[in-house]
Length: 204
Image (cartoon, rainbow, N blue to C red; front, side, top):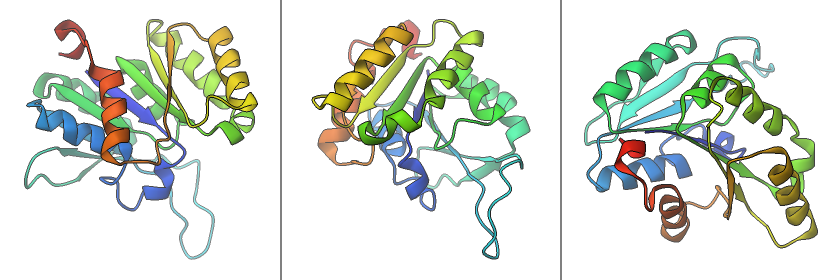
């Protein structure tokens, strides 16, 4: 199963890709006896005080979730081949994606069996691109299910968010959870939402 987790908070922990909600889910899946590959989307970083070149192809980091495994870099143009091979070698592929606007990220979304998106209720009006990104991924994968993590469902803004996404997206679920929290309870809640009752045919 290819699982993608996209969160604006991922960029905050980009210096330590193994300290994120996605990495925590990958480790928990490995403890459940699964052979897991964790892939992390690198983002361009400033050099010498200058803004990063956003047009440059960003690369990916990949590591097996097992003792002694090392991070290795995967070029953006090689991500399709990486995923094709990983689907043969691993039970689960968990992908942490702090950015969605480039071609390789869109490709990964389109190959997923489940896409998880974390949304900050106070800022979602400024991130209309998320809807178009999901629609674009579904151009290639019409059945792509989406799970939206919403940090505040009860507020007026949260209710508006749920209404908007429910009207414009089919096959979508919601979970009140902030992806910036990686405590056991939060990771457990997301893990259960993703994998509880997961059929072998889907999660294989």
